[in-house]
Image (cartoon, rainbow over the protein chains, first blue to last red):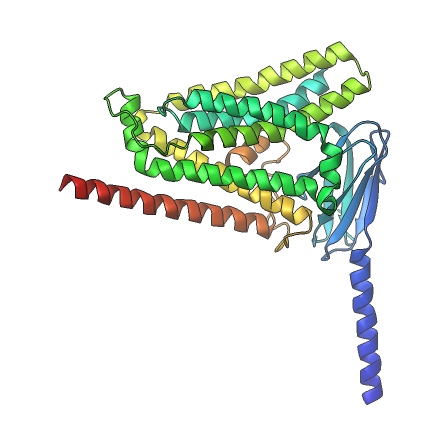
Amino acid sequence: MARSLALAAVALLGLTAFAVSAADAPVEIHIKSQAFAPAEIAVPADVKVELHVINDDDLPAEFESYDLSREIVVPAHGQVKVFIGPLKAGRYRFFNDFHQESEGYVVAGDAKK
Amino acid sequence: MLATAIIVFREVIEAALIVAIVLGASRGIPRRGRWVSGGIALGVVGASVVAMFADVINGSFAGNGQELLNAGILLAAVCMLAWHNIWMSSHGKELADNVKQVGAAVKSGNRPLTALLVITFVAVMREGSEVVLFLWALAANGTGHLSMVIGGIIGLIAGALVGVVLYRGLLKIPLKYFFNVTGWLVLLIAAGLAAQAASLLNQAGLLPALGTDLWDSSGILNQGSLTGQMLHVLVGYTARPSGIQLLFYAVTLVVILTLMHWVGKRHREAAAARAA
């Protein structure tokens, strides 16, 4: 009994650690030749996620999203970090405010809308 | 050229709307024009400085420099807008009389002129720095120099025109209601800016979201549309708000309204005591 409890506790701890580390690992998005790469990033739902937006271009960009209420200038060859969420499962559009044709989506959970 | 014009227009319009309302709300305050112009001029200088040091700002405060700077100046603007409205709650009538030319020069020594300066400074610097950064980069890359300049100028003029139209529209409001209307506009702008600051601090990981997507009205009014963007500036419209944005919005409204009520009441009591 005590042993199975201990096992369950260890399993639970392991799970928690996994959930936290999933949210802890920053997700990278590059801006390359005025486009987001990848253009779609999958993140877990219901946890806070750290995004790193890395600008490989000679032009500054502005990472912006109405869906996420985020906006931040990404200097040329610069990098910014942006926290998002905890998000409900779904698709959230973001774009480059300085080059509005460049867009991408954050896909939280297994949303297939 | 058109792309440049549109980007510049969208940035300029945000500052122009705020400046127009501040000009309306401060109608009748002597020498307000000078202070507002001063704010615009300082804002342009500030915008260039911020753009010049974008890299440095971005790297400071453990990568939270942009958010802290922007949230800081937004909250400063919120305080100044609050100060203006609270001051108006005891001097609005005098000002209205002043506009009507029935004498009553505004006597109080503590006119919120600094507030006008700071608000316009913040509005112009915030949006302006993005314009400068964007244009500068285009120039550095030698992308169609002349067409870019023309596009930028068209965008600037068009954005400023929207501000002029709004200001002219405001002046058509009968004086009896005028400061009531501008007071509410200032109040809603302040609440909206506070919500923006909250969103920035949440983006930096410094404040919790307290729930995201509390509702989604993007189907009814897309925040990216021109109307959506203008309402975002004027009343803080957000299509998919988070809890922290809503909380900052509500607290700002309540605090400013309470202070306005309290100061206005004290002013009336003092006036009544003098009359007695």
